[in-house]
Image 1 (cartoon, protein in one colour):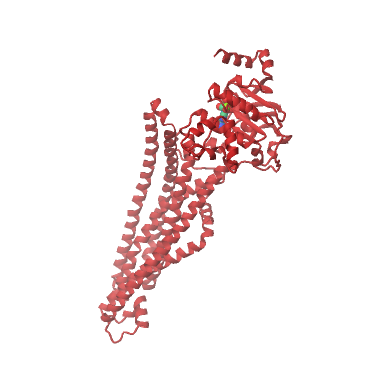
Image 2: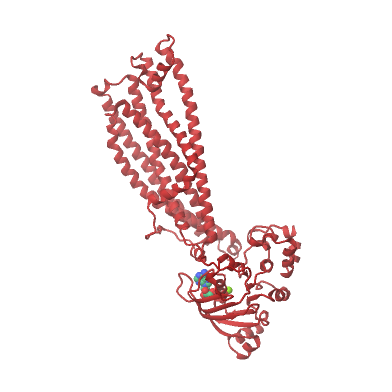
Length: 614
Ligand SMILES: Nc1ncnc2c1ncn2[C@@H]1O[C@H](COP(=O)(O)OP(=O)(O)O)[C@@H](O)[C@H]1O
Ligand SMILES: [Mg+2]
């Protein structure tokens, strides 16, 4: 669902990080890239030095035109007069050669500095994004199930796509501007101080005012940025749902509703972006006006008799040029605020994700291959954040190699029970043991290696049929083994009818396959895994009676010699299980063989007769 309108989604509480902590943590990512970072700093130093020298060059020019006595008092003119022979040329003629030459050299150095600074800074920032993005993705691979239960898929995707890019803004653009323009300000300011420090006092008055404006504006930027991020999550979510559910939308006439939801999310995004733009757009003219005021005051003082006397015409123009040049970098520095706040808001969110708990994996027990004896002792479970208990006091012993069927109405907790076996969740009370060892003592990967599962909702990957069967750790399986598994799952026929057979690339989540075909691929995958414990959660629910009958026969062969838990909707398919466990409202209400349970005449008999009547 979309959540919107005004809810600040700031992660409050004691774990909220201060700006400085976020900065420091971001910088720790930059550390390994220090060389490129330093190189880019060098580039920017060269670039900003060029800006100062521009004013200095002007001084050279004007003082030469005026035939001033102090023509060599500037930086460039000083160098020119000291190191190059004037060869009897007069001042203007010398300047005619020296100034263009200096201009060309300066332009070339500035260009080099610009390129070096920009490219290296981009290198740093793109590397940072890459690293953050991969860390975020890797985090998802080890996050506990509750992580996925608690967040919309779209919001999670948008963190990887949108939020990470926002950080890039803070690092590339902001860092670039801070370094480049900051250095320019420093260089210009030093130059101004060098020319006349008393005049510079004017700036000491406006600087604090600018600082106040910048801080005030920054706070707003952050708030809007958080909302923009959240709304991007909503935009992604609604688009994702509408893409995967386009058929439902058409059949149920959901266009209008989805249209509204999307508009709402996008509109919220727009309004927050506009608020950001409003504050951003307002802050620049305010700061510019402040600077103009300072400059006007400066000119007034500079033209006063007691100060004017200390200047040559050239140095006065140089002073005013440099002072005017201060405006642009200061404005850019204040504008970069929004970029920084965006980046910090995004980094805050990303770091909060990275700091989430991973799946608990403290066990050390490792078994090459379990026998498959399962034992549940007084297991109770409540979903994290939920109120009602989903499983209560479940006691169940399954000897190795046995087949147990779980039956019960939908919502009675069957799927939850098998999820606990794979440690997707931890039981709140009680214990589950595999071969007499508590599940928690196993290394997580080793425990899961003992299980093959066909879950209720089959997931297929955007890859070939072959790779979907030989998925993950099974990737090394031989073609013969893959084919044998497909045979056992009655999948070979339809696979071979696909355009490229086993090499056909499946569409998004197996698009283009029927529900039954998808299930058969999932069953083939489970068969190929050849694990000691096999869990079939309504694995044949989408199959027709005939295919189910065939698969049932094949599965019986597969089930022999391994512990199997079958959850089946059609009770005819569980009749031959070693034992049948009947669940109702999270508890086991009966157990026994098919014959015994029918004779008891309880829930099982009722469910059975209902289906028989169908
Ligand atoms: N991720 C979840 N978070 C909270 N409650 C859940 C979750 N998954 C299932 N439930 C609830 O747990 C109960 C049992 O669900 P489930 O184990 O899927 O039943 P069954 O497989 O027997 O149909 C249901 O009431 C369901 O609403
Ligand atoms: Mg279920």
